[in-house]
Image (cartoon, helix red, strand yellow):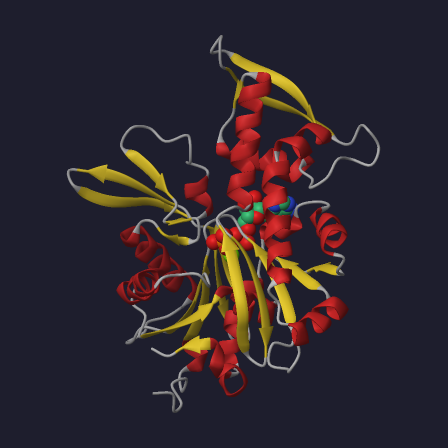
Length: 345
Ligand SMILES: Nc1ncnc2c1ncn2[C@@H]1O[C@H](COP(=O)(O)OP(=O)(O)OP(=O)(O)O)[C@@H](O)[C@H]1O
Ligand SMILES: [Mg+2]
């Protein structure tokens, strides 16, 4: 039961186990770890050996020889590889706690709002397998909204749109509860995939995931450039037909077209969410607008496109990549105010 489970609060860790990135937040210290959610594993005679985790493992993706696999244990927001997810959480616990400990830490961990009971259980068990003494689950949009500084406990509606690597989630929160939430499995990764497909189709160029992401970060935008030109960059890949290294010059406009379908899916999700907001809260949202968070929310011009299509003020969170971890951590640190946010263990 609740009582005061956090006598040992200083040893609590809030974790955002995302599809793209894993973050850890500690009371009084802030975000203490932020790395890609990737584990590189070597398969040897039926056993797994961890070669690298996080940043180092991400560099191996697409460059790994035969017996080395780089695994992202979360796919589209849910656990795809339970064992590897547990390894990743264990790595985080080890890295952010110093000294010896007799007992495992309290862990708050975020879960996508649409998670099934089976998925929730899988995340809880992965954290337990990683050594957590007790696991508290918090809905991701609630954590994101708290992290972005929205007044979720007040009797007025707050709307958050969290675009991560695997999922885009919209939610309206009021009086400490999630009034509703919706999600689609289209986010940053799907945009990268669209860029890869476009280059293959239009330029006969094969590129890897890392290159696709770099293109998005460099010349990606949600709408066509205001002048006809926009930014441009040289991309190296392999020519499909000839099989040889090849370079092409790609402009901002082309990439905007390549990812238009994914941008439209996000816009449609926001619009359909607005349609189901109860009227009392709709007025609040019209007034206060929505907050865009998650790494995908940083896509250039997306705030503008959403503001235009929804007729609402749109603000991009200053801490978009950290909001879920910050919010989960803040909730854990102020249980008298935020106890509602956790699903009791
Ligand atoms: N400036 C940027 N512009 C566009 N996309 C960005 C930017 N910065 C990061 N991203 C993208 O944001 C995504 C990662 O965001 P985030 O860390 O919020 O995801 P996640 O929480 O791991 O995923 P999920 O919430 O879906 O499980 C990646 O697809 C990354 O390419
Ligand atoms: Mg996320």
